[in-house]
Image 1 (cartoon, helix red, strand yellow):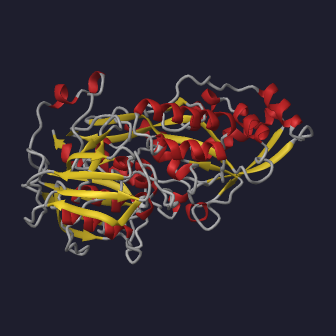
Image 2 (tube, helix red, strand yellow; image 1 turned 90 degrees about the vertical axis):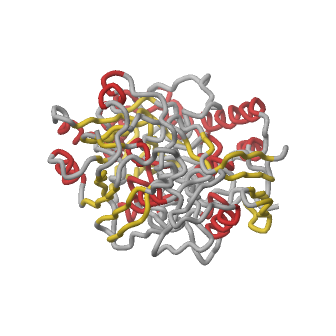
Image 3 (cartoon, one colour; image 1 turned 45 degrees about the vertical axis):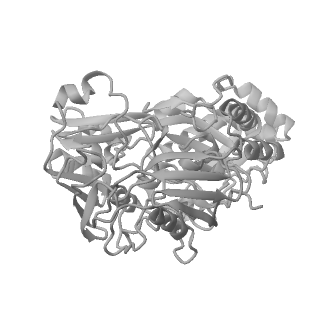
Length: 532
């Protein structure tokens, strides 16, 4: 029986959108626009930002302009192939997913009306919503979902997202009736809905990427790779009353400074991922609102467990004790973060919150390094890149703090091409941005058995056994206990230093309908936004 982990990268939602590198998903991974059509709004932002109080009820009409960076002439409208931020933004406007995360990153039914699995979670039954239309008037059927899954897995398509569906056996896809599909897996996989909530945009059986037709909130009108895309409201969208705006324009900018200037002067309406050093330039700007999604990304350093000195867990523990987490947050991300405890997926209900918070302990770190044979000092290289605001400065702060434990850290700054190139999984010590998905999905690509995106080369027989048990365990309490055991292993002998959960800042002028969310993407839920 094939392992469910074929090693396909499962990037986090925000990261892919901001840094657009599915070749780069081997280390980082991103934020695909699974629900740009928008999940139902979550809890309102506290304080002065409450949408309904400030702007009133939703309004229809107008043109929404989103300024982004990262496009190129190789941009695509094919949701199975898109790799940069603008590709995935367009996909979220045009298409829908079967499941989608809400503002609290709880997986909700989207195109699925009902779903269930058998007792071993290796057979799933999905019933699609009734009366959902594609932009050309065709009704969504089971054939379209089957075609979408097979197309994503088709080697000739070469989808970078095939790995997220690798647990599905295409020979075990069965149409039960016009709206019902039975999905057979190679083995049990409880988090299938989450795996399909990020990259599996449903397309019709006759899909043409040059004239794309989806079920999303907006219809294709025009596309200029590397420059601009124009979409119009789909009047028969299955969510009554959505979307609100008449048109959506996604505009490519060369850099963040030009984007923010365009927002200030009213040339565009929304920008995503405002760099922290530039956020202050928005303060005092009349009519501009900044939405902060707390703890929406992860800052981390990965240590390769199969090469010296990090093949000795005493060294890995020492490096975790070197970090003064509050000081690193203050210096590297200007305070826009929350102290973390070397574990990802804080938002998962199964997250183990009983583990003691780590604090800087240089005496203990030096003792561990002496035990590991590095009493005369240790010298290492830390590879990083300008991929996330604060990523380089975080590495530099760590290097300065390491001096207190007698460790010399040389910070190697490389460009994105090098960081995500052929050596991307081979840096002994490197900055990292783990998945912001829930625990089992994050483990699927980060450190679980069989993952080719395991940049730290972490292999632990006990951890792997627990993971394989957890993904098959349908009882929530039993699965949570297995996950807690996995996290204790990560905490005690894992390969990540995770000092901070980072905030994401998005800004807009005269736009309402966006709320802070765990996924850090309020302004990508285009179907929820209106012009105030």
